[in-house]
Image (cartoon, rainbow over all chains, first blue to last red; front, top):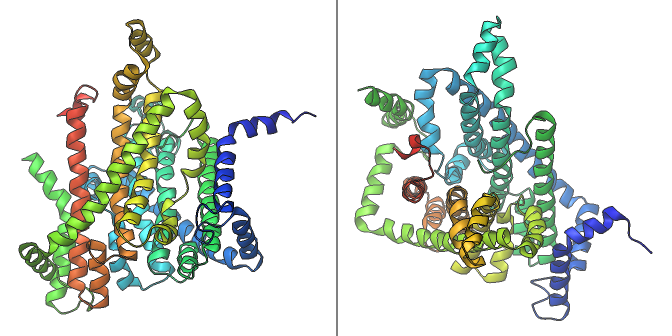
Length: 259
Length: 255
């Protein structure tokens, strides 16, 4: 009886995950911790199944994904436009760059209560905050990316008679793409965090709300099931971005999070 | 002179916004929930002099910094250990790469249920959030240590511990500071959110209180204070970084 190679490899690599899960299960089974606070994995799985079956989890997940995706897309467009504007025009750089460099470390989430007053509770406030939080890393990285384009590439294109538009599309954009993806990889988890945070603070829909609501009604297995879904969503979004990055910026070996 | 012009241009947009805001306030054209900048500034100064601001800000800072210190110590230690010892790396890597992209803050309500509504839960969730960027940065930084440096140290008779502390750690420092910067920003965000959800003191609480009592000037005082904190903490870290990394940084950044 032999285990196929890929499966054996997977088991060997991921053994710590299995070890931890087994440890957790044993802790709850042997009553070392409160069963209600730390429910068994079986209970969590059952809640997960039930949530998927009756559509609750599906609904809240789709709300969270919609807000994250909408805000992130807006920030992508806005960040790319502002980043390019700052890199191309001296005046734009002088006007806007301080807002981005000095505003970067200010926690934008603090504005949430003010945004809620302006736009009301609901998806609009969340999307606005996601946009605000994500536009910073994207714009900053696009700016740095366009700035770092090798001057001789631009000169070469120009001396071969390329127009401004052509240089923009064929030289500047591709050369700054790896930077854009680094910015996106910082921004995407932020988008999900901000969405869920606003849902925890004051929403009536979405995964963050569902987790808060479940633990407030002492349904910890359900809260943990929802947290598992949050984990899966976060993991898949990140992997999808890495995959897209690998296909689009195929000449770059890997997209790092840390510069 | 050119510097002055640059500064002026940089301040132009924010200043224009504030002037417009103030002007609208004088015309009484602002909605009730948007107090004039001058009113907010007055209230901010008043709370500064009465010491009330220090109570809330101190509480918030205490939580954020405790969590930040604990989380970054763990992240740094484990990151170094994983870079130095193969079995630890094999154990940690799958766990971290699986859980890294998960927004840890979603566990906040569950953490509150497990550890109560007090400072403990807040410090724990901040520490967990800060741990990740520190671990990833330290591990990545220590992992790319030049082989020759390790060989040289070993040749000269350095033990494992000495190599970790005197070769791996210094070569990971630039990355570690990147991680610290991310973690510091994160600790303020998580602190603020945790306080909004539940607390009886702190800047987040101040906002909840202000909303419940329709004291919108108080709300903006808290928002402004958190912004100032985030900004100052980041600048301080950059100053520390500059003195620590004096030999590493490109001349342009050293100034």
